[in-house]
Length: 491
Image (cartoon, rainbow, N blue to C red):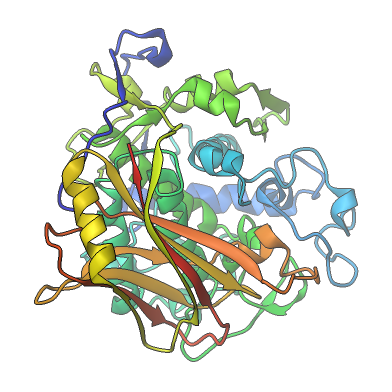
């Protein structure tokens, strides 16, 4: 995005507000780029800790299996569970297992970044204790970097004799090759588009957009969904041959690279939160969309937080990142800065449909082009000009019958202009969210998915016809049907 239309309903809260109690002390721990020399000692500490965690019984709260299952776990294990005899089906779940925010509810979407920040923070504490490295901080994988070396999975994660290795990943990554340039381009576009997102919450907000990409994109990429030629792995959590651990919500938390990936996701959020554009949902917003916050302390204690306790912790943590994105030169949590911070009102009540069209067509192998007719183009431009500060959102409603192994980039195209990148459609978690992966019946209409994108700054002040372009990437054969397109205005 090139500019921002600020949400006029934002409330500016001074740093002295009790909602943002300031911790003026400097952060104790520094999260570093996993491919930097400075991060080697932290990765070595992770290796030591994970060796101990893997040797623990799966019913022990600090165990590798227990910690992975807090994120999620398959509803049924194929055959007798070789890794955890205590768990066979979902009725055997232990305390806090399966708490992650990967479902299609508004509550889950609101808590996605908050819950994962707390989750990896507790893992960080456990590694610090088990490794004995008192200044340990969780490294991040700086994928999407212009430096090709940063797009290589850190060596410590790839060593076959180490406790951080997992075989069920895209083979080129385990072989030390960088993420292919085509996928790097997509990561870069997604991260750059997030920079000027005007809202935290909502279907087109920062949190949901980040969850789709690069978050979901990287899960599928690491798990081999985008591999060419196609690859199949023995997924040791499901105990069957399928896609890799990271490509499936119920097995993702068991792959040690998960933690470096989510440290990067947290870094992107931190960068946006510190930027000019960053906004936070209010505590009332979070309370209206509650989620369980249950974790294991390094001493084995079970910890449960109220929404208010969680909210106060998330913005007053004890770490910072060595560098941030979006031009920020202040790598420290926003709550530790003596500055004003804006809180966005997530309940955007005034929604006006500018136009909508039924499509009902399968997206083809290459580009799918939807022509916006003169009348609809005029209505779009009229709405944009009448309220310059309004948020214009493009909605794409699609139907699938199983989780696709492809991704689709979305563009606007005006005559004589370069295609304007709007966003991406990824499908990580669809099987988990909608039951397509565990023999559930799917109705005749399939699984209905909705993708939303801010396009206020992508629209051009013209009544000319324009086109919406969807470009398919990947070699999957799942049909994705575009059911409806609409443009709405939020005031």
